[in-house]
Image 1 (cartoon, rainbow, N blue to C red):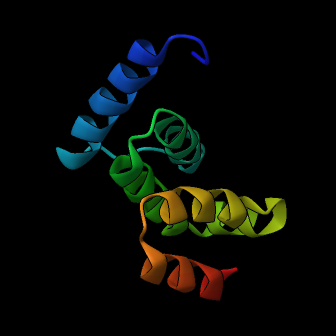
Image 2: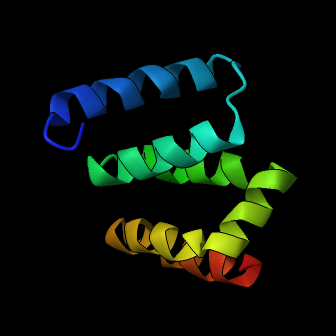
Image 3: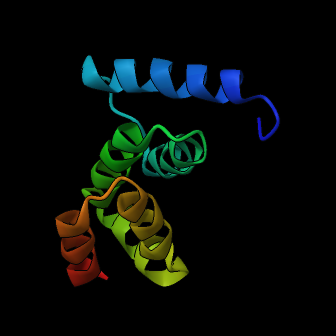
Length: 92
């Protein structure tokens, strides 16, 4: 998917639509989709996937352990969402 941006964007769009329709996604799936959305410059979607992943205690522990907030800060900074960066830093 790294080389196929259209496929990555399509996957993010479908997953985002399903999530918005009420389908629950697993924490690891949300983390993957957040990273994929960030890579494909779908920053609002990346933020929403990331925020939803934080609501899962297991995911929050994995994120804290693996340093994933730093990755989220990059796409939040790119989207110029500085308040969200400060909020996210408070969770780390």
